[in-house]
Image 1: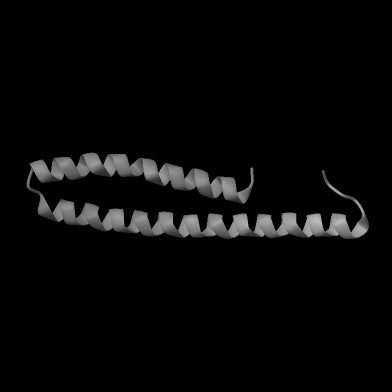
Image 2: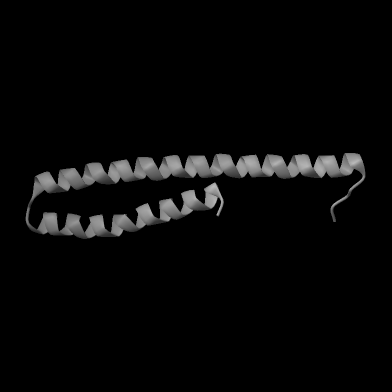
Length: 84
């Protein structure tokens, strides 16, 4: 499994925890537990920041893959090993 795939799986897993937090927010709201709602809101901010960072890393890895593919194609053309 490539690093990029691991990052995407981690991001999906973290995203799944958002559903649990939504339920906790509803419970805290129903109980008028404003401290808990604030705590959960901060947790969601951290999750968003983490997911954004993971997306950034995944995109950088994709760019690296694209660059590597381009280099291989250029090398194939230059050496006469065309890839069709």
